[in-house]
Image 1 (cartoon, rainbow, N blue to C red):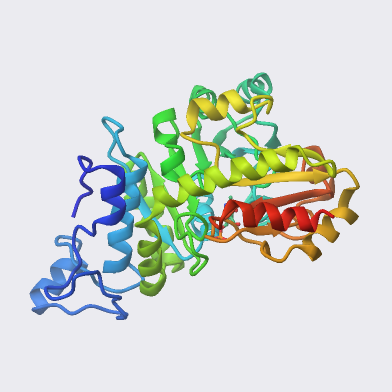
Image 2: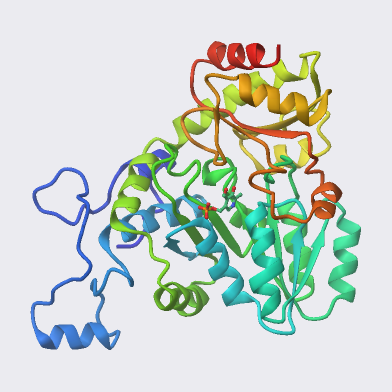
Length: 400
Ligand SMILES: Cc1ncc(COP(=O)(O)O)c(C=O)c1O
């Protein structure tokens, strides 16, 4: 089944083009590790790659194929002359690892944004570096510096961005950075987890690869881990990235893919509500006497507001902030809130609060954290869809 690009965004999210059953109304969970063939001849043709069919759950299965087609259509939505191909993985990190494994080789260089998800930094600083790849962390707001790297660094294979970034809530110009990457023969990849294809479509900005932790807004309910990697070069995806998933076995399970499909159906309505609530919470915090700084891309005086406005539909559901009295006050806040849940994830229906320096970004070296704005006093809030008065009331009480 090929994705149908003519449908509206919400229809793609909601409608299961095929439900792989003649009697069910919604797609069942295919709790089967392997699939049957009508004849040995047919099985031989499938294994030779001459015919398409489900073979074995680590290769492909109906629940994964259904969601892959939806996410491919969403990331490609409205973009002309694009024949992208995407694969689901067991986690966001498995998708990002497949990207690095398939695009970076010994002697190559990756220019990565410095303020990205902590485990991605750790992956680059350990397993990727150990393969003989040079890792260069850079400030992706400094375009002149990126241009300099493109001219001076040897064998750059990939530029890697995350926008909006976790947890500093910065935005980087995907169109400009893609052009810089291409000027030196490199590819451009972005982690689009915070925005989802509803708020931002990186292929329209010239990006080559898009990674997602589907664990966050795409699933939307905190019920399952998952990852997605899509590339504009279909052949590369079908050969190199497909091999990564099949041979390393990081396949999304039928149940987790089914849960992801349930969440995806309400993506736009959820994102609108997250964005509206985040805006109101950001304004409340900015006006509170205990708060020093609020990182929210919707503020016109945010240094990256214009970039976010150019490439995003709205400004996202995650914000971060610093208290005037520093980390001690942040710990007190996290202890006092009752509605906001203290946990490391984001993008769920409910509001989540956490402390990046000691939790999600603990494994990023302290110098790198400080250099790229992940201060010890920074608190991250994934604003949920509860009644706005309740979220603000909880924070007000917590800040007393
Ligand atoms: C921006 C971003 N990318 C990637 C990941 C990794 O995803 P997963 O936890 O699904 O492996 C996370 C997890 O928090 C994230 O926030």
